[in-house]
Image 1 (cartoon, helix red, strand yellow):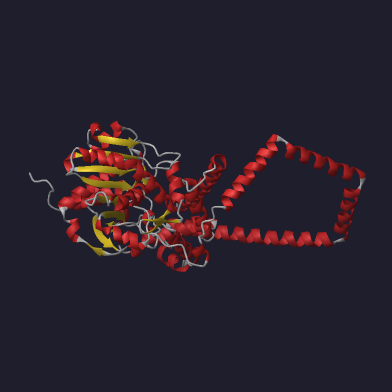
Image 2 (image 1 turned 180 degrees about the horizontal axis):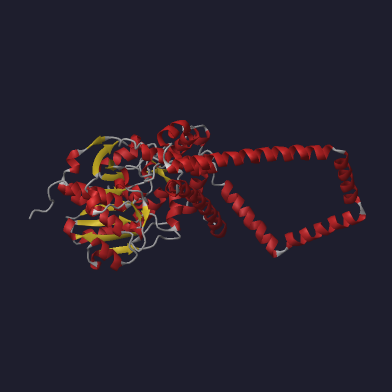
Length: 503
C-alpha cells in the first residue's frame, strides 16, 4: 500500500512546494522590486498561469485516485508508443556515445572539480569554467564547460534540478516567446542567461583547436535548458550535437520537431517528466474523475494493496458524507435558533449594549488604538509592503490578450528526436526502493543484479512528440526519471551488440 501511495504523496509534495515557491516569489518581489522583465516576473506569470489553467484537485485525487491508477497500470502495463528502432539499438558506436554523454550529464551533479573529474574520468585541468551552484539572483542553473579530448569536443553540461532555485525555474510554466516559436517561460529565462554566461567559455575552448565540435548534455531541467541554449548556439556552431536525457516538456510542437536535426532525447517508458505539462495534468485530472473503479476492481480485486485502497476510499467517502450531514444539521439548527424568540432577544440585547455608554467608550478606544497603529512606523511599513505585494501580483497576470480571448495555453513537448526505452517487465521486474549510503543520484530506483538482469528485455522505440501527451501513472513514473535507469537500458543494448572498441 505504501508503494502505491508514493505517487500521490509525491504529487502532494510537489503541490506544496509550488505554493512555497510562489510565496518566495512574492517575498522576493516585495523586498527587491524586480523591476523590468527579471526572473521573478517570469516566474510570477508562470505560477499564476498554472493556477489559472488547472482544475481543482481533491485529497482523494492526490492519493487514492493516483494510487488506484498506478495499481491498474502495474497489473496491465501499457504498450510502448512508437515503433521499434533496431538499427540504433544495435549500433555500437551510437550506443557508446549515448552512454558516454549520459555519464557526463550525471557528472554535472558534482559539486566541485575533484568530484567531477572522478565521475567523468577526465582530468580537472580539462575544466574551462564551472558554476557548481545556481545563481540566486539571475536563476542561472549550475553548469560546467570542459574539453573532452578523446571525443574531440568542447562540452557544456547543465545540471538538473537539485536546488530550490531550480524548483522556481521549473515553476515558471507560462508560455514565453523563444527562437521562432514559444517555450516554457522559466526555461527560456534560464537558457538566455546561460547562453550569455557560457558563450565566452565555449569560444575559449575552440581557440586552441577549431576542429572540435560542440556538445551539450544534461538531465531533466538541465536537458531542457541545455537544448534550448543549443537552439541559440547553433547559429555559431553549426555542427552542434545535443544529448538530452529525460527532458521536460518545454517547447511548442513546431520548435520541438525542428530541433530533431541536432537534439537526441532519451525518455524512459513511464517517466512522468517528459509528459508533464498543463495540458497533460488537466487530462490526468479528468481521467481520475472518470476512473472506472468497477473495472479496476475486476482486474485487481485479489491484490492486498487494492483491498487497502478500496478500504481507504470507502472510509474517506463515509467521512465526507458524515461531514456533509453535520454541516447541514448545524446550519439548520443555527437558522432555527436565530429565528427563535431567544435568538431575537439576544440580538436586541446586543444592539442595546453597543449603543450604551460602556459600548461607545469601547468603540472609541478601539478606534484610537487603530489610528495609533496606522500612524506608527511599523504600521506604515506594513501598509507599504502590502501595497507592493498587491501591485506586483495584479501586474503579473499571465493571461495575454489572446488567452483572454479564449485561446488555450499552447501545449509543450520534449525536444528533438525522441527515443523511448522500456524494460519488459516494467521497472526491470522490481519495485522502486530507497537505498542508503549511495550517491544521491542513485539512492532511489530499480537496480537489478547481474543474475536478475538476465530475465529482462529492453526495447527502444522512436516516437512522435504527440505520442507523449498523456501521463502514465505507475509505480515507476518517478524511478524511470533517474539516470541510473537509462544507464541500465543503454547498457542492455550495448551487451547485445558487437563491441564498440575492437580488440
